Image 1 (tube, one colour):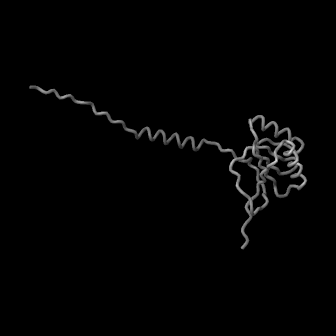
Image 2 (cartoon, one colour):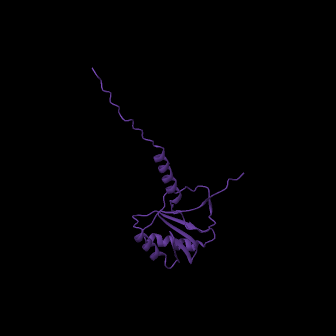
Image 3 (cartoon, helix red, strand yellow):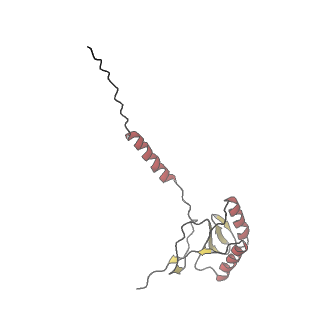
Length: 138
């Protein structure tokens, strides 16, 4: 009696090159990602002991002076603020956006009230004011 012995091919899949490629892709996407940030404007924010961090913001108003106001990244003045806000909201398709108001410490109080009036006319009642953390007294 003769037995035939059949040899089965030995298949080995090496995953090291696949892991290397996936790792390279992860690094590429981490480096090339762009995160939403406020415009590159230096502000001297007022201090507050009870301020809270706001995680997600959609509509950010940055106020330096009456003629220097930014709605997200769009520059405008107090007179054109309402039209600029409407344009930004329509362009970015915002549904009930959260409004965050950054104001320089030295801007007049009347300017802040005028901006809040414009926001209320647009239907924004809850406006988040940005402050910096007050240093602890020793």
